[in-house]
Length: 144
Image 1 (cartoon, rainbow, N blue to C red):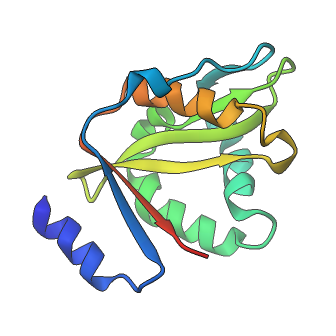
Image 2: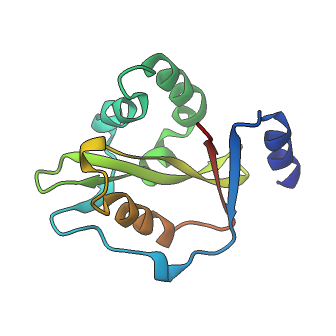
């Protein structure tokens, strides 16, 4: 596992950030705000998840990435990808964990719709995800 992670880090440019969590800080967990709940993404909602990720401009990339990385394990994907939903069951945030390269526990793309940011929804959803995560857990992100 260490060699795969090191190869990812070595191949990344200076804008890539890799973070590691060895164990969760349970005191940082928070519930979803009143009126919001969490649940797994359903198969008929894959396009919703993709549109969240694509942000209106990266759909070709999202489709390619999903087909290459997640589709071969789609049963697992739908057991790991969670949504935060509003009182009408509308998905407004997504998160989960993924076994990258079938060896490294990572955060599965994490996103809250902009109009719902700043309300604690992302933290609440991420708290739900972290309760069942396997550690160490890695996050890859980019500095912009």
